Image 1 (cartoon, rainbow, N blue to C red):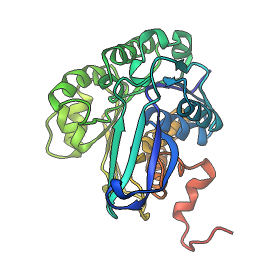
Image 2: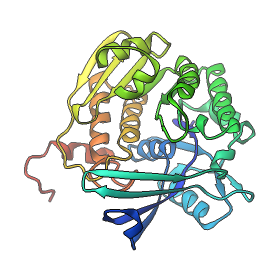
Image 3: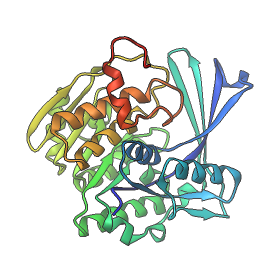
Length: 314
């Protein structure tokens, strides 16, 4: 049995090494990144099993995506190599020391051609949880249909559905997103959302109120991510608030995916509610301490490092 199955687009990622306008960058680091695969890597690093369904081009960047995920023990055996479209590209720069700028080149990419036929129904039905995001439905009609088909397959088999709203304003307008995302939220058992994303879908005066309004749409567990202010969880009618771990932030991209991976791992492990929320916050904290979407995600043994006071691990 696979603990977590997810689907979506993973792209090649070029990260500029210098701060300033991208046009002046001369050196880049090459890696990969994608919201869903970030969560899959986060789960495997914490000791569970994950599988990723997606499409990549028949090119070197597609090989990079598959080999990287496989190297992180994510099952990529259901990934489709598409000879008719290129692997998508993400370019990340730092306009100032405090502002990360991310651009996407994914129009007509292999990942945007994800479709229901790419799904392995048996894999979805045998998972302990299906994780989807609001990014994939925005990529294309066929990608939206793939997410809907996966969710329907999971629900028919009694597999819990986890969803991260992950709103991307470059892909669709708030009104377009809200009409689609509300349907997916209603089908989810677990929902991850930022405070701003929550306000796309419901009204509320504070994180607790937003969580309550979102829970009324269907999810049993609502996690409102508050960044440097921690997080609020509403599960089965009970509210919990978690404080953030104090760390030095170098790159905020991927923190939400790490948070989701940490919480889902704790949930699948049947950890106490306070423990799973603490693990989520710790994973999110680790994610921002180094460059890259997933490279600094923790393993179980790493989680205790955030509470050390001496600053030296010998």
